[in-house]
Image 1 (tube, rainbow, N blue to C red):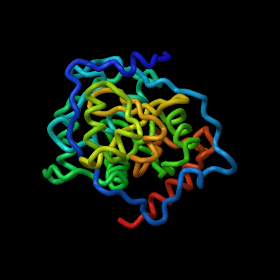
Image 2 (image 1 turned 135 degrees about the vertical axis):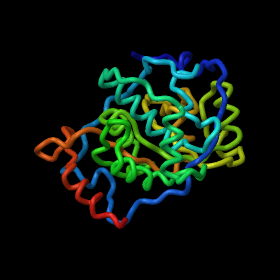
Image 3 (image 1 turned 30 degrees about the horizontal axis):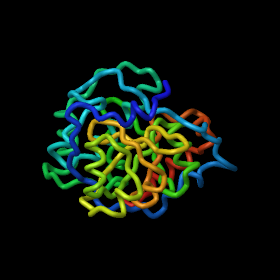
Image 4 (image 1 turned 90 degrees about the vertical axis):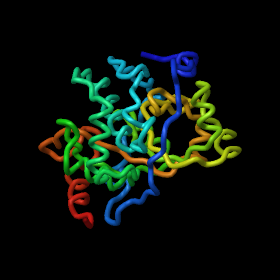
Length: 261
């Protein structure tokens, strides 16, 4: 399904910006960029990937807030939104999760504190603990300026799990159903760190899920607002150790296993 810009920018009912909760990130020593784990070049992604449309309306928004209107659980909600994108792509029909389930997962991870998450550390926890019956096989950083690999991750794995800084003008634009532009980033005041999964792109914009809806992000804005990005690979590792796109999951998993706890 190809969504028009009118569809993407039309404000949804009760569209309200939420809380922040992404703490300053890091790449663990011993873990390399996704491109390190492929011999040669990654397959070229298509020119555009339309954001998926989830089949279930969970809370009056297209994607569900999952507590991010009350808690700084964007890093946890971001995993769920990414998992929803994967499910839509695979046409899986799983029972939808509730905001209470996501918030409880978050508070279990943080020992009951609404403290936010470091994305790399939280992905390590999800890989070890599991995600409501789903298995995170591996994850790897992606350079925020490497659009070819970001687009590859979105197309191949359903989404890219990313960390950004949000300004007050970006929040205003979200509520008005307008794209994030360079002006909304550089002319605004930073309000906090946020986690969003990128689930689509075209020649003009990246498209992310945040606060229950799809948000368009102009590429010039992405350069100014982005801090980190991760490819998340779900499911079981094939017997040959390759993921079907040339990525050596066996080597990536070995590096993940050797990270300092």
